[in-house]
Image 1 (cartoon, rainbow, N blue to C red):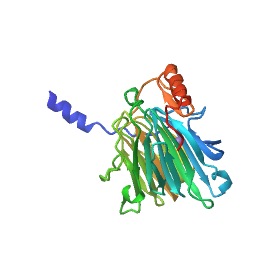
Image 2: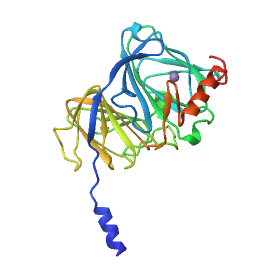
Image 3: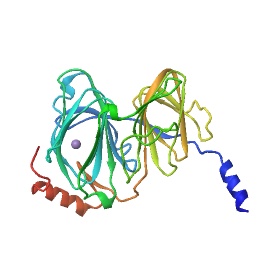
Image 4: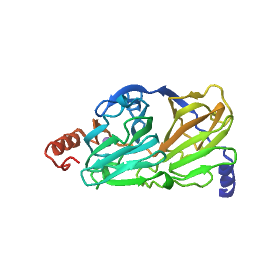
Length: 302
Ligand code: MN
């Protein structure tokens, strides 16, 4: 009987996401010599559909970052810049310009192409933040470029009674706080979570989404598939844990507390042809992107 089936469905225990594998980032440099750690987009983790790259930059030595990312193109995907410390100024060939501040986000959909620069708005002090590349489906790779840019006062900070703080960039927490970013291609979740010592945090995620946790500070234990505490799933600072599929994930902080990013999105399941700042579906489209760039079709440098 359908009624019985329905009851049984409702009693099916939630599948908890646990750690599939984890890995540290790789030191590298990009732009005009900015030192950074590449976490996704390496030979260890080439991509986690729809996420093409995750870079973390963190330095209080201006020599590591001051040269910035002078004018460069993008086509076919989105760049997401989120800062924890410091300020970055971006400027593009269409006249868009602004400064990204800690707690604020710039979610840029490059679409068919932009030329922009991303330069530190500081000559000393700590610069710390992330750039995530999110793929676009074939249907949107040649769309008009678009910015979703939110200052820190527009990204809600959820504060829980147990001291947990969650900056919600995209997606929705279990307490109903909704991030400002709208993305009807990959429906991302992007949370910056700070846990006090010995605190649990659970987040429901769409079961088909790919998801990862990057620990910024402290360490975490990710529960096992049944939702039980497991000493085998410890993720330490500066490590990324790719999560298994499931409906929800629960983590526990240790004595030092923890800060981490929890990011998830719907995979596109399309072929990926990538070369530097261009990410398309086919080699022919990549060649077209290079030709268009060299023929000035991305516009004049900002
Ligand atoms: Mn860029």
